Each structure stands twice: as C-alpha cells, then as structure tokens.
Image (cartoon, rainbow, N blue to C red; front, side, top):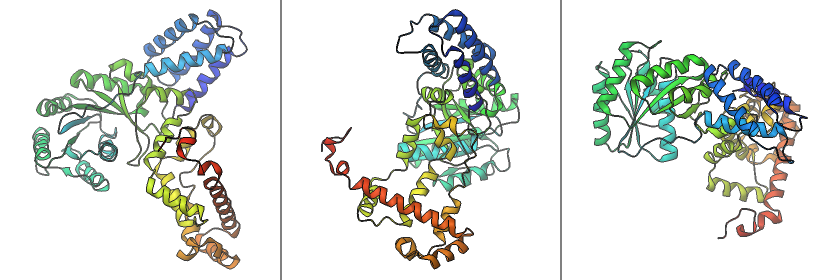
Length: 445
C-alpha cells in the first residue's frame, strides 16, 4: 500500500539534503517532484496542484531552526498537509439512535456485502452493539446467500425476504424487526451495478427516503483510482452520503483515491478494508495514514491490533507458567494464533517505523507459520506439554510426520528453548517484581 508513492516522496526530499536553508528555488524543485509523485499515484490533478502550492507557501514562510534540517522541516510540512488533505481528524460514526441505521452504497464488486459483515463484527465486539444485517440486494443471485454466510461466521442475525423484489419494503420491515427484537444497529446491504445508472440511483435514493438512515457509507474499491473519485461524486450528488469506505487497500493500489476523495466530495473517509478476513477493517486515521505514506510506520495502530487480541486472564496464566518454566508448545501455538489474527504479516511489519522500507522487496508469506504448526501438530499431546521429552528418535518421527527434516525440527526446538529462557528472565527480573507505582508509566494500586 502506497509503496511507490512513499519511495517517490523520499527521493523528492533528498533534493533538500545538504542544503543550509529553504529557498524558493530548492523548494520549487522538490515540490515539482512531489507533484509528479502524486500524479503517478493517480491523485486528482487539481488536488495535487493545490496541495503542492499550499506546501510551498508554508515552507517559504518557515524559519529553519539550527537543530532542524530543511529536508526534515519539509517532511513535517508535507506530513501535516497530507493529514489535512485526507480529512485532518478521525471521523466517528453517528450511532445515537436506537436502532441506528447504516445504509451501504456503491458499485457492484466494490465489497459492500463483505464490508457489511466486517462492520457488524467490529461494532459488535468493540462497541457491544447488537447488529442486524439486512439483505436488500434482490438482483445478484448470490448476494443474499453471501450475507447469510457472513452473518453465521460472526454470529449476527440477518433479515431477508426471499420472495420480495422491493428493497424499500424489505429495509422498512427489517427496522420494524430490529425494534421488536431490541437490536440497536441495522446495517442495510444494497444492490450495486457495474456502472452508475439511473435505475440504481433511483432505487437507493428511494431506500434512503424510506428509512432515513443515520449513516450512508459509500464503499469504493481503492484500486480503481480516479474512477473511484468520479463515482463517489455521482453518488454524493444524489445521496449526500456521510462517509467513505475504501476497500482493498492491501492490494496493488497507488493511493490516489485515498488522497483525492476527501477534497473532491468533501466527505470523510471513515473506514478502510485491508484484506479478505473479517477482522481486516480499520478506522481511518488521516495522521496515521500520512505517517505510513512517508515511511514513518504506524505503531499506534499496531499496538491497537495487539490490544484487541490481548486477554488479561490468559496473560496472567501464562506469566505463572513462564515463572515456573512450564511454558509449553500449546502456549506457543496460542501465541501464534493471536499474531495471525492481527492481520497480514508484511502489513504488520510495515507499521514498525523504519521497517517498511527495509522489507519492501522481501516476500513475507502469510503461510510463514505453516511449517512451525505442522511440526507442533506432529507432536503427541504429552510432547507438546513436556518439551523435555523430545529426544532424537521423537524428533525424527516428528520430522517425518510434518513433512519437514530433522534440522528444521531441531531449529524450532532450539528457538523455543531460547524464547522460554528469555521470557523467564524477563518475568523474574527485579523490574518485573517492582510494584506498579514504581514502574515507568505504572499506576498506583
């Protein structure tokens, strides 16, 4: 995501390296490269020009401190303007009504149905909402079944009328059902077309009029670049939607839609889809996205993803096992499962400042844990619980059973032993025994 743009911007800032001060000449040269980088990323031309003009104006009005290099100051100005370009502040959903109603809109293939399931799951787990998914796409043969499968996966009820061809009535009846059964959130999945047409626009406008939703989200495939922005404008002219959802940001996207859409339609980007898994959804934070575009990582989002998987009781149980040197392969597998739930491994690594550039040409396979899992699954339950039993003959058997070789098995066991020793050292250190009020950032009890 944004890799090409990040590289181009980095090259642009190098023009200012070694310069003692910011001048109109070196700023103009740098921003010429920045504008080209934005246009190559499929950013709207007017947006790119306005952006670079604003940056130039701010850069020339700045006094460069002796402790700050001109290139560093330029990066800061570009970062702040990128964040402003994408909305400035994080936009929240309006869910005050009971039930709150969210209407999904967009073209066919943009990912509306999948995103409806992702959003329902996120609001159920993070906000303790009781969502009802509503199938109002009465044209695409598999749409209702797709939503039903998603609803079952996240254990959320779904409302559909198999015989009806009237999406307005279906949506109205679903809201009545939600009120009767005390659901506090209704997410309405609607039909899309391969291109904008009058029939589709009239239909979704009628649904909007019939149910008066609290939120209208326009779902757009970010890989379509400027076409996405143009489509958003047409939908906004008819629907006056409240927010944008960018899907497939994990794909080969140049980033033009994310950087242009806010300015063109004057509506905030509220969510991004970052993969196929149902947990692959993030609230959109303009400042964090600016960090990632400029290669600064996104450590806050990484920590948030880790916290979602954090279980305090499980952590306490593990700490006791580690202190007694009883951490075993079952515990190791549970930790791997938590890491996998956090998302794509390369995306996670890129969130660490400085790592994104280092791994850009490295293929990090999401199946990287498969051989480790195969080795551990080839152990008996007793061997997993008591790693000290793993002698040479057992290791040879495990290698055959897992389709690996004895060297790989030995390497894993060695790494596991080293990890276990290190974890015990950390948990039994003087620092770990200090009362919370004595630890950095600790709270008094």
